[in-house]
Image 1: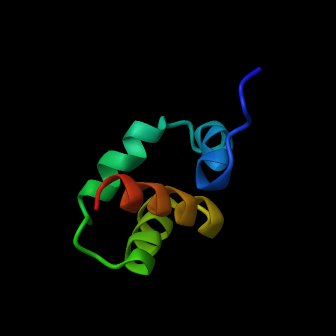
Image 2: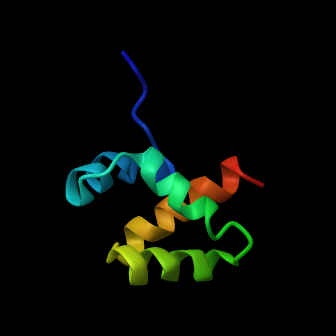
Image 3: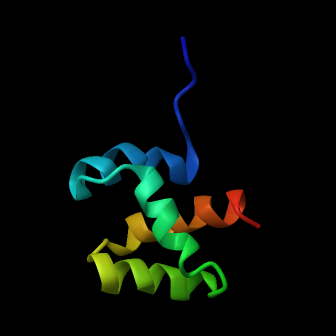
Length: 68
């Protein structure tokens, strides 16, 4: 049996369901603002795409981990 996903990635299924876009879309959007600080990237998603704070924070956390 597969181990359940933990941490920020555990939000991914609900993010895809709520906003109707795959995670790859969100990672591409965050590449546009890669040079910004964490909270600035969160605010970008919130202001540009109306993503909730928790979902935006989870996306940014994973993006920053995978794109140092």
